[in-house]
Length: 128
Image 1: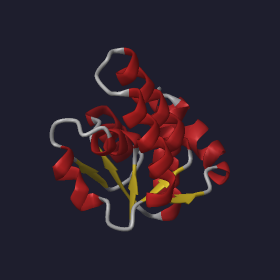
Image 2 (image 1 turned 60 degrees about the horizontal axis):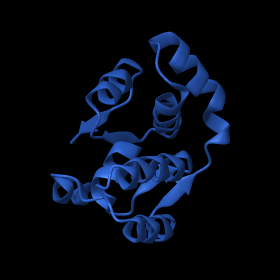
Image 3 (image 1 turned 30 degrees about the horizontal axis):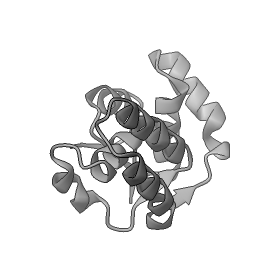
């Protein structure tokens, strides 16, 4: 099984260059609830920079939760904290890695730094 991180979700839903390439990883997609907040934050930046229409952003935010299955992230907070401390990363990035690690999922990411960190923590990673 694969855990999809926010970089993939933002790329796909906001149709960034190469978004079609990540679609193959979105069959029965799984993520953590934090991804909804990170998606909202990324879309807000795009709206503020006039890179994305406000109504389109709202449409994405309303559609997104129904297209993914979310795993509970509360169980992974202490592991994420350990990973963030050990590898000097953000707790946000570490949450995806901890969830992937504890559920034996591959992590799908479009973020090279996230992929490297995940590999160091022992997570099989697909970098798009």
